[in-house]
Image (tube, rainbow, N blue to C red; front, side, top):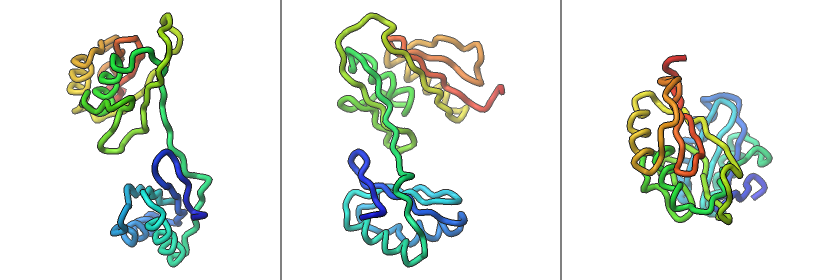
Length: 188
């Protein structure tokens, strides 16, 4: 298990490669492992996420057979937290903006069924005067999904703050004033 690190609920490993072709070959070789949750490949690495130690061991053996080395110091998982006194008020907005569906707010997390963005969770706090904390995301999306995301976010309680720079970006805010910019490559 030297190749693997537990982050949140899964085991993660990064195997270093020398080319995209080598990354693709390794991903193909491990693709039928039971318990495999995710494989992301790039020119110089393959990131693997599994649920249980057994497939992790088997994947490490395949990596060793192919001459790949793991670098467990490179595995990371970002969680984005927002302090709030009312998760139910702002959670659906963030689910709508980030996934296109307010229904992807589960318990105190925004859950992305496609796995394309990092975990967003809401930490319960005592009510406080605004602004105690402010942050915003720059979320890059394909131009053809911006209108639907804005519509879903507004339906979930959000507001459009500014369209001055649209289509390059549109600024939205959740019901508590936390902002997000929906960004595209158009108009830049």
